[in-house]
Image (cartoon, rainbow, N blue to C red; front, top):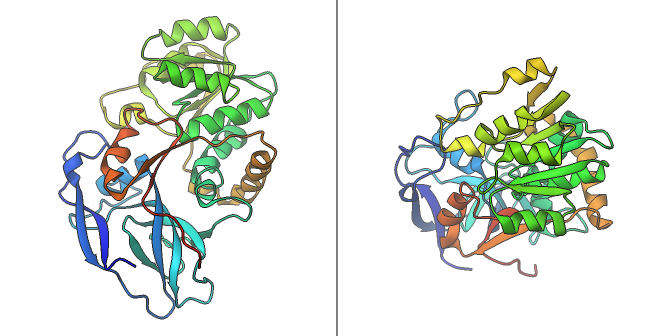
Length: 344
């Protein structure tokens, strides 16, 4: 075991107008490896999942999240292995995940930094799948699309940021629900993969196409359900093509996270077309988790659902990988692998 515990800390307050943290906010700090006390476990982190929430924790979200102070360890979704345990519920070698300090090693009393019980690796699946498709990413897609969007067979479903971690799963779930699925992504290669690898009906490159015009051609009857991860101009284009009684599910708004001035101007069409827009915060739907996880796991086993990941390797890759999700550098869920599990 190494004698130094590397940690990513808030080196300075962020002054950016958007959510994406500046590179200089990420500070690398070294400290001794902590020793677990009674009721604690020492976790050796293996994987970090790069998500906008990591940046939101540093900057803060009014009414939801207090910003991390300068000097605090950055936190986010992480998966690791228990290397020392003084907790009756965990054994050395257990693979666990939750929102944890982004460091080589971190202590836990069995809960993550938000007081939520740590999740064990799901039997029959590896740690990354337990974190992603059977974790927050898959749950957001399932709850947002199936529980809130309620697509019906034959519906036209549009997914923005469709090549991202949540978007690609939401699109696949729409296909499993018997829908036509149009993905919106920012790269021609990504668009091709959405169709050829993930079963999307069609895909639109928003960087090189007129999204509204393309939707008019691909969905002449209108869009019944939009699963939105972007907001702004992309959402506006879909609203122009919304079918009567169409539903917009707001999962995120990565297009406006780094451009607070980006607005939505066509929302009056919701009134004209009896449409609805419903946002959600996935952790408020814990009553749905067990059913969603069971069904997602079954679809994975049956090969009906594919997991797409983009893995950076090395502790030092955290700032670049974490920032890259805002520019669409990733295809699928962006992970940073910092170590590999060892036999207990």
